[in-house]
Amino acid sequence: MKKIQAKTERIVNGRTLIVTVDLGKTTNVGYCRCPDGTDNKPFNFFNDGHGFNKFWSCVSEMMRIHNMEDVVVGFESTGPYGEPLVHYLQKRGVRLVQVNPMHTKRLKELHGNSPNKTDEKDPKVIADIIELGHALSLVIPEGVAAELRRLTQARERGIARRTALLNQLHDLVFILFPEFLQIMGSMKGKSAQYLLTYHTIPQEIIGLGLETLTLVLRRISRGTLGAERASALYEAAQGSVGIKEGEDSIVFEMRNILAIVEASDRFTEDVETKMSHYLGQIPYSRSILSLKGVGKITAAGLIGEVGDFRKFKTISEITKLAGLDIFEISYGKHKGKRRISKRGRPLMRKLLFFAAVNVVRKGGILHEQYQQCLQRGMVKMKALTAMARKLLRIIYALVRDHSDYVHGYTKTQKLSLPEAA
Image (cartoon, rainbow, N blue to C red):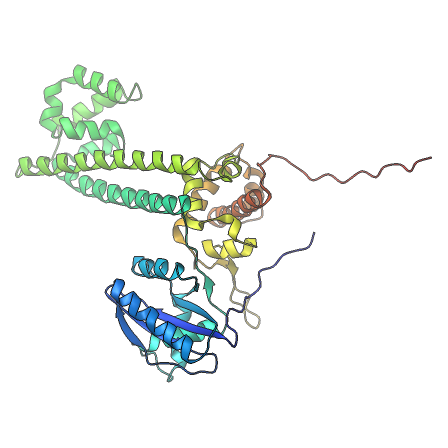
């Protein structure tokens, strides 16, 4: 089979106007350059409708004066500040590209042989990168994919907030009842959170009595915890070294944190329900879900991060988007180590990594390949990263071929028919 490789696509010709924007929270800096080097002075415009119209008027006037036919607009990969402008320009049918901030940082050294950074210098550097052909395609999720991206990001923020709250709770529990942490371990469980909500301090645990405490633990944990854990907790409460000063105020804060954690859990459940709903509207989601070990949340998150797998022509493009492309630094007799670039979407890498953890378990679709990597001396983290790369290739192939995954499938040779007598 012919191997397909990604090629650098030249997006600038003799009739293309290069437009770049240095994005900011309130004010942006625009810049236009013709192929012959003719340009205008960088200009400011606000991040609002009036500012966008001013920017587009300048671009249109530049195209008219210099008789340009096409326009390509580029900017650095940033956070949310550029999204309104991106959607504004998308409706006008212009080509949108982005450049890696690392490239901008390194190339600006060539301008005046100085690392000086100004709002007027950055747009010109971005234009240089586009002219050199190193701009990247801009992934703009639309429709259901856009909903999945927003929900995936909302879920990540919710989980991050929950983790921060539990860390705060950990510190407060250590002040009032340090033995609780040793016996119950993690505070992520429902049993620990229930006890901290309704029986926060050691005196309240003692007040329950050992028998009642045992029944409460057994009921909340659904039989997982019983008399042994209850007895250890009861004894710890009797001899606790937790402080008493300021106790009421600490309990008040702890119960407030626990209420927020409970609300956060409900929010995450609602988000995951909506993610499953939208995932069902993606035609090729069935192909991804046919992989044992890849669940609905992972599939929905990947589609949200990628936008549409079908818009990528080669696997190398989507591998770079994830930041899983391999590089090494070798010179002379020095042979550098092969590493992933990590220059893509971090959430996409995270989703693929945890999916790889699932598929390399015993009975998983990549268990054998993972064990082979370990036998060759590869450390576990590198082996899991290799499996994440392989999993991405499998997902891309399934979507491309509109097929479901068949475990243990091998391509058989076509049998030649005997010649007719």
